Amino acid sequence: MNQSMPKPARSNLQQRVLSGIVLIVLALALTFAGGIWYRLLAAAISGAVLYEWLAMTSATQPASNRWVAVGFLAILLILLVTGQPASFLLPVLVGAVLVVLAHASRVEASYWTMAGLAYAGLLGIALASLRGDDSAGLQATLFLFAVVWATDILAYFTGRSIGGPKLAPAISPGKTWSGAVGGTIAAVLAGLGVAYGFSSPLGWVAFAGLTLVLSVVSQAGDLFESWIKRRFGVKDSSNLIPGHGGVMDRVDGLATAAFILFALGALLAGPDHPAAAFFGN
Image (tube, rainbow, N blue to C red; front, side):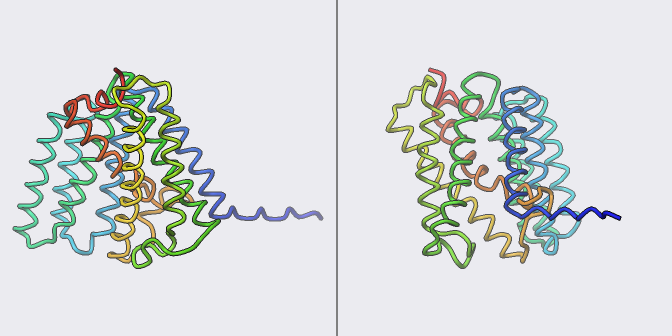
C-alpha cells in the first residue's frame, strides 16, 4: 500500500519570503485604498505593537499600569480611525502618556509601559498622518515603504552573502557592516526610483539626503528593538508572523523612519499635512 511521504517543513527563509510577500501586498492594497482602510491598518499596527511591547515588559509592570495604557491607546486609535487630525491626536497622546507616567510613579512601576504607549501611539499617528487622503500622502507613503523595505531586504541578503565585521555584536550579533551599507545603497536607489516622476518641491540632492537619513534611522530602529528584546531576554516580539516573529520585528525600522519623515513634514508643512513638504507641488 502506497503511503504518502510527509511534506518537508518550509525553511525559515521560505516562511520569511512568503510572509513578506503577503504583508507587502496587503500593505500596498490598503495604502492605495487610503481613507478608513489605511487608518485601520495604522491602528492595527499600533495596537499590535503595544500588545507585544507589554508582553515583553510585563514582568516589570503591574497589571493596572498596563490596562491604563491599553485603555488610552484604544481611545486614541478610535479617534484615529474616525479621521481626527494629528494636531488633535498628538495632544491626546501626550496627555495619555502623562497620565500613565503619573500612575507608574504612584504604583512604583518602571516607565516601560509609558514608553510603549508613546512609541505605539506615535507610530499610528505618524503613519495615518503621512498617508492622509490625497495624492501627496500616497506618494509619501510609497516612498517611505520603498526606503524601509529596500533597507531591510538588501541588508539581510547582503549581510548573509558578504558577511564581515559585525555592526553591533552586543545588541544584534547577526547584523554586519556590509549589510548596513548594502541596505543603505539599495534604499537610496529605491527611494529615488519611487520619487522619480512624482512632483515635488525638493530637488534630487535633497531627496537623496532624505533617503539616506531614513535608511540610517530605519536600521537604528531595528537595533533599538533588538536591544529591547535582549534587555528582556526574548528572541522575537511575538510569533504572529511566520518566519518573521512579531509585528514589532517587522515594523521596527518603519517606525523610526516614519517618526522622522512625519516630524520633518510637520515642521515644514504642519502636522496635518506633512506629506505636502515632500510631494504634491
